[in-house]
Length: 487
Ligand code: NAP
Image (cartoon, rainbow, N blue to C red):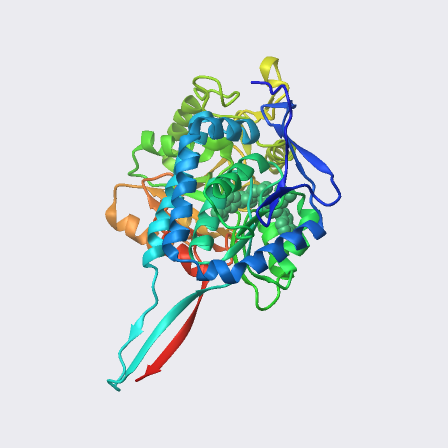
């Protein structure tokens, strides 16, 4: 799987593939083998970002007037391009981010589906009409695009998250500046390339790679930016929120500390599967990943025994290898953070009953591998029970009853996703009402969401402004005018 020749990829500004003004580049490396360079990318600076914003600004009036059916045709064509290159794109995604190849294929397919979804949904996205006493008066709301949108995305879903922002932004007539994570610029480049090949007019989408420290400020504070849609850490989200002007709209999807409550009537095998899938798939690097299991005291021993048994069967390795279910962590910083939190957990007095060791022998030595970790004897105020780790670490917290469990579940600053395992309908309805979370599941994994349903968090998991995904995902990118027509 080693590349022989390392390609250098360019920015995309005003319809041209161009180098950054200072002609510096940075490398993207394979987290399963840090010696493998996946590609070199433009180390853009503020002036490159300005240039891209200018191009988007110039292109806006014409794109805003472009027939919606033409915009839809471009999204559909881009979807076709992604689908017809699914094997190559999935391979690049795995090489760059580390997730297992099946998951990468799923992400490419989902991204194509999302482009198609917005191509259809955007055509019937309307305002409202209002009854007026005067029969000669028509009152309605009209939806208009905002202008230039800044789109900043993380590495964990490096294709599907950009698509769920870019597709509704373009479909509603906005122009875009897209800055991907510096860990996953290649798959982001491929998305822009697909839109380019699909015939998107110059300046409508612009793509700039480079570190947040060099590009971030301009991306969020340039006067021409009308909205920033960001997915990433709460820390970065808070910094961006402080930098935007009063007239810049923001949508932020941030961190999580997602609980799975296991009630006394739960099917234990199901609860174990939900924990393993929610906590360890994608190497625990999902914003909606299960990081806390809150379990009724009397079930704990049996649950932990079954959980260890199932976790020990997971195969860790390079995402290209047959049967591997857990790939490496995405980068060195991730590995350090996960190991740091495992130490914190031990120091706090939690018991590490499984895993938590870095894996460095044989084929693993060049990658960022860690065994999934299970902590018991975790108390609700410990740092491992409060702070987002964003890795394969599950903390088991015991509770005496539902009331205690829901108090623990809500006693964190996040509110992204939560689930309960129970067969009691009344209890599940109570949970749906009581839980402080943007996504609520009953007998499901905390991870996973539909492209046609709204997605987003509450508390510090989001700005609680606009939801992403689904039909409401279009709202963020438009403003309404209320129109009174007298005839
Ligand atoms: P991150 O460090 O916050 O970075 C995300 C993106 O923002 C990257 O493109 C980064 O650029 C850029 N960035 C960072 N600081 C910035 C600033 N001050 N101004 C402008 N841009 C800035 O997050 P990550 O490590 O990539 O992703 C993991 C985090 O994302 C986790 O906290 C996870 O929960 C969250 N996440 C949330 C959701 C959701 O929907 N709620 C989904 C997925 C992930 P560089 O790469 O150049 O640093």
